[in-house]
Length: 149
Image (cartoon, helix red, strand yellow):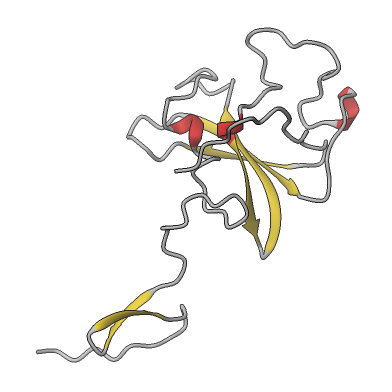
C-alpha cells in the first residue's frame, strides 16, 4: 500500500477533463463517486473557466466544497495506453452518500494500479494459464484446449 507523504500540491483538472460516474466497489451500499481523468501533460488553472469544478481556486473554498480532493483520491494510471491523472472523489449529488466518502471508498484513486506511483503492483494484469506445473502469463486471445476427464 502506498502512502503519499509530504504531498503539498496536486494537479488541477482542466475544464475538459473526462468525468464519469462510478460506484464504490467495497460494499453493497453503492456510494456514488466521480472519476476525473486527463492527460498527464496538461493541467487546469485557478480561474473558474480553466478547471473542471468551475470555481475560483485562487480563493479559499467553503467547508463542504466539491472543488477539492485529497492525495488519497489521486493517482497516475494508464487509460488506452496513455498515462493520465486520475481523481476518484465522492459525488456531492449522490443521494446515497451526499458527498461523503467512506474510509475505503475515498482511497479508490490511490489504490488504483500504477507503475508510476508503485501502487497495487500485486494486481493481476494478464490472465494466467496453468502450463507445465505452473501458472504462466498469457494473452487474452490465447485459446486453451480443455479436455474432459
